[in-house]
Length: 239
Image (cartoon, rainbow, N blue to C red):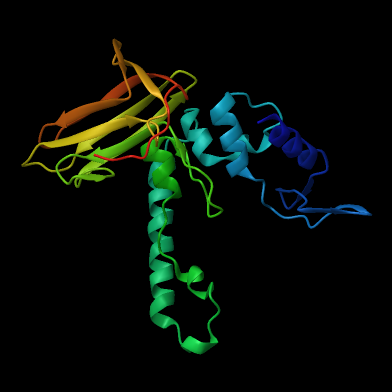
């Protein structure tokens, strides 16, 4: 992580501030840094922080709404993020319906502007992970879910999850069954690939990387999970 941290520090050393926005350079040439933009590479900063819990030289995290929420300083973030994502989905679907382009005029990446999938906030808030982006990065997350009734990966239908705290040795998640008539089972895995290990569940010792939770109809609760990170051989998620 340290080469990445040093590069982030190099960029902030030559930052510019315009209209209260921090601008970082994207390029370097014979005349020095140029190509300034508002991209603070928060995805990289989050990865560094969540792996090390060291904020040295990670200046942008103070302005990151998800990190602010985990710090207890942005209580409205889950609702704000949901509303923003739903607005984005609506705008992109409207763009699809209004598109008048002709098929032979479209480039191969043309449909990307209309992609309605908005999952970054879901990865942050349900899995305690940093979205891997579109460059083929590996998903790093504290939690992963499997649906035993549906025999598939992901949260079961009518089950909601919210990670509201991440520490170097644990995570707190709230699970709710929105179905008021039927119970729901959800399997919670330690890490996207089972690479982590649970050490405690609500204060009780538990050496496992998978736990199964039954939620009564219309019920919910909070799980306090102790964890050790990157101690198991990663495996593909499956039922």
